[in-house]
Amino acid sequence: MIQRRLPGQPMLSAQHPIVPVALSFCSGFVDVICYLGLFHSFTAFITGTLIITCSELFDQDAALWIRVVILATFVVSAAIWVPVVKWMIKAGLPAVRMCLALECLFLALFLMSTVALPITPEFLSLGTLLAAVSATIAMSLQNVAMQMVLDFHIPTTVMTGNFMRFILTIIEKVTGEAESGKPHGSGLKEASAQKAPGGPVASGIPGTSGARRYGRSLAAFIGGAVLGAGCLATIGFWGLALPTLLLGAMALLTRD
Image (cartoon, rainbow, N blue to C red; front, side, top):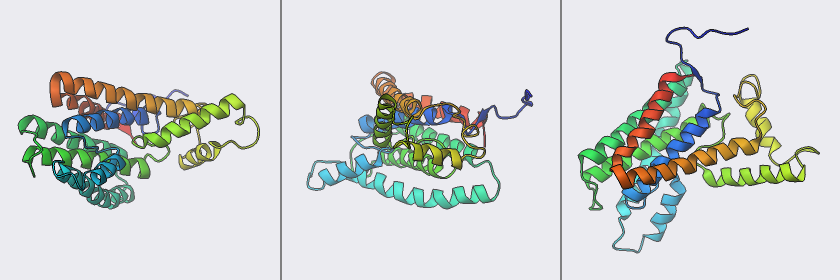
């Protein structure tokens, strides 16, 4: 039976495979902008910021305060987002749409702070502070959303793990392990299928291999990173309008 979409009804299922691809693109785009424009700071790949912070502890010329602000903001905002998203779910609110809209809002604040205020490494520079905080809150929310309301999708910011899973699934396919016995990746695939209501079909990935899913996410992340670097080199922080508009469109089109 063909279901007709009613006027005003969201068109994109939260379980559609394009969702993690788009979010991976946004995280790669934002992280490169932050690394190049916020003095080598990560806001999505938070482990990278932690490593840079440790390496700069005894470097007097380093903009250490930016990394400290990002780490503190990530922890505090995640601690706030978790109960907020739980409340959305318990209250029966469209949590996915709201998370995407809020992430879009904070990316818009990131954009406005960078174009309206000077971005300098000076201690507690207002433009840099607002940019780092708003970008980190947006990426923290994306991580929380992927864990709590989009957990049937693959991660969109932990690219090292995705790359390893991509390699493993390719090896399994080449060696034929996926055909005999229980392969390495099957547990994760089965868990993802069980989490999504209705199994694999409801998860939005019917008949899609693990390698293809991880490969698409990685390609989107890399594509976002390359495009982000190109935009920063040509039009500056105005390039942030692209992931902001993408998230806004997803928030308008996505149903939970």
